[in-house]
Length: 543
Image 1 (cartoon, rainbow, N blue to C red):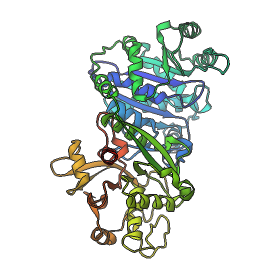
Image 2 (cartoon, rainbow, N blue to C red):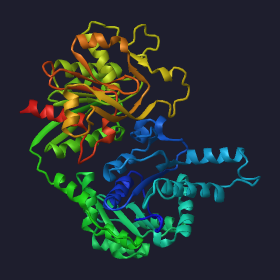
Image 3 (cartoon, one colour):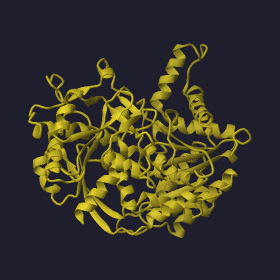
Image 4 (cartoon, helix red, strand yellow):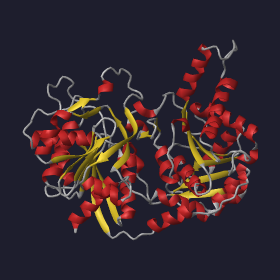
């Protein structure tokens, strides 16, 4: 669609009744259908007053997702990128904290020419400006906008009002509203209840927005009676009420929508053509693959109380499930209580130590890494998982029992892990780490072979992954660990930092770690090489 001749289209996804229903999955699933033919650009509006989620506790908010440009965003961007296949930019994430920050900056600079600065029109105008500028900057054919939170929340009110005003500007034919709600089935009643949805839609209508489509999240398919009732009270056609039942994989949601003709209806509403569904066909071939193997993989960290803390790690394993025809059971292992939980590692086929921060649970992680190394269990270390693998190796193989990280002991005399040079004088926590996409050059070995196999390396042996860290491996200890068998198999291009390490396969079937976060770029149709290698090694040992 040529934006010079055609108006950008907008698909707005809101949520009602309760949070956590899957607005991100719903939005991404809709976007997948248009991604073959149009430049569809997702955007997330979050009502919290943080500038970004970078400093939030993962147990409270879930995983922090890092973009190529280094901006820290909501975990829903992981769904957007995995489904749509494109890389997002900073402008596509907007929090109320950033909106208010910019309003104050403008006011202090005198941009409002002495006027009383108000929620309407100044804040709502800025929100609209941000949305339209993002559409222009990305040359979007379709803007796919998810409004975080739940209708009725105080935090979402200004976003909803801004979108109401935006619809008047761009025209109703260029904007489509999808409202996701919850349809409960109370115990002992065995009946789908629509009253919460009716109330949610009513609240949305009171704010000047009339949903074009309602998606009912339920444990089972919505009955015809339920659809009829919702359609009546929402003042929409019955076919515009969609069912979204619980499925065993989020990657099956697009197909579920496809079976109901959902996207054809959206295309008709927006007056655009839906040309092909090639990506859905590719996905279906993978999703229909019969899984003939079974593995147990342990994810060992300190945020295991909420699985969303490691959402992209989990998704990367799911990508391997379909590509390697394997059922993977994830075992969550709390490293703060290693001795009490050690029996949970019995029968484990592979171990992952994902990223993390601080000293809590660290000794447990080091014990887990030693357990994997000694027992020759396939191991993948991510970010902190690389740094702690180096510490474990120094302590137990190189006879350096005092090996530690400056993150644990900032007064350590000979730290194995040191603070990056540019971090020495950093005071603020938010957005100040080494963030975003960086390139690394690989040497011959397991890691290079994997990136080559999955066609994610260029002819010069260079790969790119995303990063989120303040500390690095001390270059002074590299010679010692390599003499003892732990090989540095990849370094960053711009600084020669340690990016990848591995034990030779003669010493261990798969002991690999990276300073990066490879889970952030893994896709269903193109899994992360390091996760692929972990599962491949575990399968080989199992057989």
